[in-house]
Amino acid sequence: MRAAIYTGPGKPLELKQVPDPKPKAHEVLVDVAGCGLCHTDLHYLDHGVATAHPPPLILGHEISGTVAALGPEVEGVQVGERVIVPAVIPCGRCSLCQTGRGNICAKMRMFGNHMDGGFAEQVLVPASELVPLPKDIPLARASIIADAISTPYHAVVNRAAVRAGEWVVVVGCGGVGINAVQMAQAVGARVIAVDLSEEKLQVATKLGAVGTVKAGAGTDVGKSVRAIAGDGADVAIEAVGSPATVNSAMGTLRRGGRLCLIGYSAESAPVPLHRIMFLEQSLVGSLGCRPVDYPKVIDLVRRGKVQLDPVISAELPLDRIDEGLARLRRGEGLRTVIEP
Image (cartoon, rainbow, N blue to C red; front, side, top):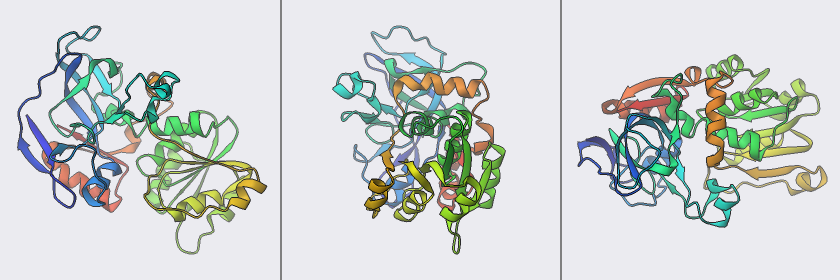
């Protein structure tokens, strides 16, 4: 099969033929229809973040496709079935998994990190982890449900516990943040989108944001939010991953407000502890999505509460993956889907 091989940081992906994978016991082989490009891939390629499995490795963790072959002892799955592959595979046995928090399982494995991912024609997947996909959702575009859609669901619904009628500020409207706008709107919140890009703010408005703030030099984001939301936001969701945007997001909160971090950064950020104590504000992190929630996310997409088309900026074949990565580096568009 053809695959884009990661050989180490600072090096371009290598397109080449590799041996076809063969499913072992309890595994299935999936023909990859789509695999979304994510900033996580750039962390490996450009920023020196080490993959758990040393290179060579196939990156890509937002995967959809059809079941091509079954390994021994696989039950309840049929060849030809349309599926989404969750970005992270939990162990299923630890105390976190047993209490419904498999997304932070200490033994979890991630496609394109611990094992080969979806920037290839085929990928091996544990049969028990497949998520069936209804026929009325486009197969390749559904790949972004595996992360770019499901991660904001977990952040908005489970971690930030957003309620209908609340003011929610989303700081950073890229491939994940723009879907936090969708999710917060879907649960009935009043959403304010913050970004440097006027184009992304326009998309946020089309997806339900009732207010926007164009960040940048000379903009007081907190003051701009209060001009729209009065005392400030009930919830701020930070989807960039930088000390500056973390502080900016916290500065939008009202008394008793909640800050949820879904942007990744290896840096430390100074946190005004007096605000957290004196104003009873909360700070929580959010990672991925609980396995139990994938059917709920798919149902939101199926019913049109959350849309795929407005947030997919390009669909490219595997041999144009470098073009997609270049777009991601330049901050162009929202989500690019590679279709091997």
